[in-house]
Image (cartoon, rainbow, N blue to C red; front, side):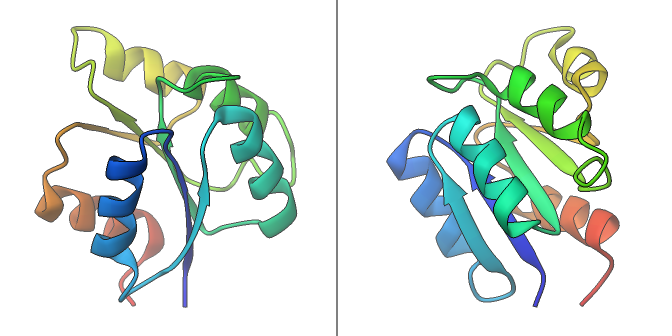
Length: 121
């Protein structure tokens, strides 16, 4: 079973994503960018869903640090952002994100992006 790390500080959002994905994927969680890096280093998930607005270390910096590590740089990262402002998707991709989703999440689009980046189960 593929493993997805959900890095999200808002408990309601994190729980929603976990409930949405837990039947098809093993889910790991982190509540801030620094913790997200630690879990990624320890667990080597198959994909990371990274909120960009996080405490301790934001998702932009956490993504840069994950992608800077040779052992982790191949892990696809999908940025999650409630800031659907012009330029955010470009900025997320420049930080190293492989894809981008705005909140509230479109469930169908999320599953399409997961299938594309992880391959169909």
